Image (cartoon, rainbow, N blue to C red; front, side, top):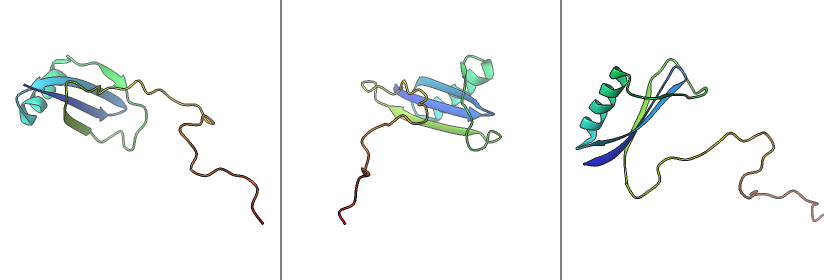
Length: 92
């Protein structure tokens, strides 16, 4: 059995599921069955490009690698990483 992560976004709702299946088609079929039965947790997807379109992504994942993140929202003015250019006086 392979492990898959399937995500769907529609109308500002996110469904994010980890599924075990034999192949890609079986994983997508299982995802559809779970959505139709209501056996999924809907999350707020925030605003994205077009809430009237359905976006589905899926991938086979390695069981030994973390596939979820705890990414939160950053406030304006929060610096992330190192700056590529540092402003300073010119050498004129």
